Image (cartoon, rainbow, N blue to C red; front, side, top):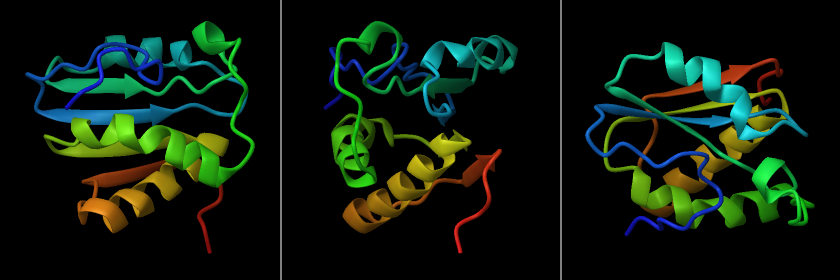
Length: 125
């Protein structure tokens, strides 16, 4: 079930959308940098920017100290939102988190995104 009190999600998911894009910003950036993208997308695309601890409205929370901590801290809030075709888009260090989340989701529930978008980051080897 979707956790409506999740601080991880920058805005409430649109359950009437046809596709969901999970956006993970670069280190130190808050989810609000996704606003221009959100406004430019078609209404049937639900852009969910992930707000990591230590940023914007979560500034008082301690940031993740490892990739394992980041993935385990996000996965429970993300799994209920995989109810429609989805994409992960990570920018810079967010790309590394996106890659690891995709791997964890595949391992846990054997589901893959339609696409993994990596921007401003070298691909994993």
